Image (tube, rainbow, N blue to C red; front, side, top):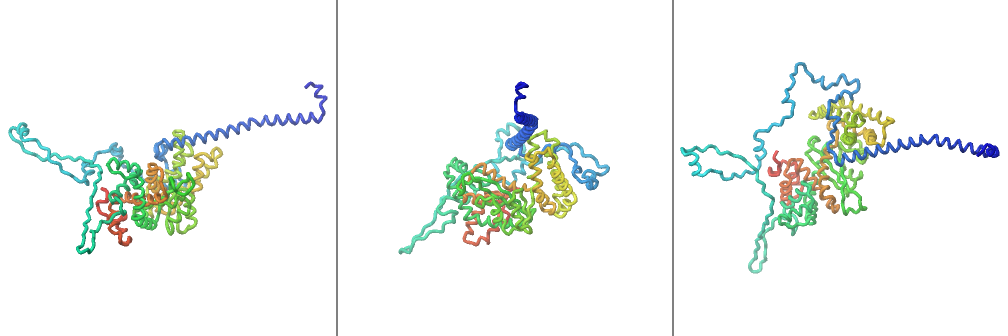
Length: 551
């Protein structure tokens, strides 16, 4: 528009045009800030995605160890994590140093593996020995080699194992039948007791299937295929039915006694894992859960592993049903159900947290980013937790009272320093709360009450690794068989896994043990179970030596 055309525009219109122009300039001036904010948001999202991809890639394809290079390489000064008041009191190196101590030579400090004399004979010492015929030279050859005569020395002896593959034999039973004269009737000799009526299942066959599936993690279809190669045709459906009946009719009484004994211990490890049950009465795709509980000699009990299937529930109801009446310590991960159960009975049930679960979150980041983790928050978190483990493990072979004293004097300052560092670090403006590191710090704050619980009792371990190791056998198995057909099958599996894992932990030969147990139950099937079950439990001293592994 020309100057004259502008002069002819009404005053109100000019004001409106000016204001519109001012608004446009303001929008234009804000655009760089908006674009920058969008770029920062996109950059942050990209970093989170890259971190998640790195962590998932490491978890899927990387090494499974939780050890990190940052802890294993170089020296770590524990004193750097202690408060100032403790640094002069606790210095691990100076406290143990003595003047005039001779340094060890190179051979002493290097891990030089030496072959132990007689190791092979020791490994074979408990096996049955079959002495083969002596391998000799003929008299003709000896006369040819020694024309002036010879003297026979002691034989050279060596041993080698011979493997005899498993094979089936059919035992044909003949039952005598008697007919009385003058129509006084017919009678038969007593048949030996059988596991299942009109079934070919024997104690040895049942033990072999249990050993293959619940110890060696073979699915029933593979066991069935292996039997076919041995000229024995037994379908997986038949074997599945056997396992359910064996568990319900014979082994349930053992399972109940094992659970009762476990609930008498001072401390229990607990964990749970999902799996699929085809016919579980729920919506398609829903998961069922298997719970596992473990205790051992450190807590006033023999080694006991109990797997529990409560209709596949993962709720507090399933936990409370199993722990009904239990008084003691429960070591778990951060699942809220455990905390809910503890809050309902705070004077009876104490829940302690797992430091390994927390540290795993830092280690996942360290392993995912590799060398770039040097100097990061994740690396420092890992180093601090390793320092807590290190100082606590110095007293792992001491009494409960000595461990507790060490925790109060030396470990507690490290724990206090760790949580002080966490709370200070999580408020840093550059830390993304949605990142793996941010979530690890947030998890530490939420679980602080339970992670500190080990400081109050010398019996409580720092982590729940015992339960994770015990659930591992079930996890290995479920990757082989993938699904369970029915809820009854899942319940039977819980019983069989419990007895199998407990037998392994008590150093038993699982096949021989299950065969022995089933034979004993058949012998005592008319008796009160309370009169004999304690004698056949996996930790019983009355078990025959044939059930025990070579130590």
